[in-house]
Image (tube, rainbow, N blue to C red; front, top):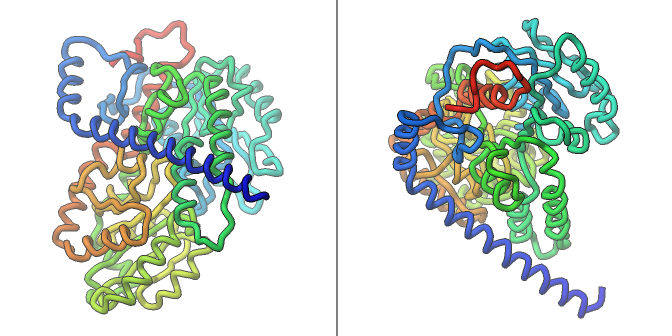
Length: 483
């Protein structure tokens, strides 16, 4: 590439980054304002509920703030779910875990669930003791996606059997938008959108070593955003899993407000809960002695965009420069990925446990003093943070909009840091200086917030009400869109 072309490209990249950073600054100010008046808004909601019904389709906040009846509704829905992959034991991403948690809960509430997904290649498909849960499996495409022509045929077969589907749900683009255009009773849940990942691309570029080649992801991502803005309206209703994503869908993607609904992710509160005895057993099992005054925990995919190069470097520096920190701190790392072996280079200060089953993961949370999520992937709402909070642990995470707008909105539940080694080290030193007494208080506050917003029960109740609201039912006796 000629020198003048390089200069022009650099100027364009600088201008693009400037515009994007300005946009993110505006979003940050907007969320600061929204978070500064929560009590006033809740009071207004209470008064409005007393005197006039709320139109749920126009409700501007997360539906998790509302209290829906715990008793299942008299009407049972026939629901179609499209999801690229069904969870395979401990090897599952956030999207798959969301699909599992939500739809098992809906089936247990009496709804008839038909799951259209891919058949596993190297394992058997799990079985569940539920007579109203059906799986329609198809061979994945070469890229690992659903065969759209085949699942569409399977869907129409079931749609014409006995009774048509009341509602259709797709996890992200499980059902391709071209086949969704005429389904007015469809809701799509977005676990990440291209606009959010621009923030990730900026961070990746800032963290890039000078000897590494410059990525052209920013230009590609902008094109992806334009593509999404064009096809997203083909879906009738959109569910955002974070407050930030809901705002982006309305403002940037220009989807009408009555078609965008915020339902925060939830995790199983019966599995993830405080249990000091199990936490103690877990530490004994892996040789973590009581002399360790600070036990850090991490879980998930040990890959670059989850921030593990950042975390590794911060820990490496702190263990080298601070003898007291090195002698009294240990980090428990659950998950698999290329950064697992690197953490072992930290010696006795890091225990790499590999991927854990759900029950063992719950024990991990109870064994630690604080959970750390160093992700630089600025999209979705990470389940591990919610699991740790429900387990009564404070959390520490990167300053990205989805997390600071919905999870760590104040110092009472945890800590946030900018995606730099220095900022992460400073945050870890604050945790060290605060000590277990402060961490335990923050953990109690984190659990209370988790019970209010992030349980599977809360999430399932909100989705159930949304599905009842948008379902095709000309003979309905109750308007489920009113609250």
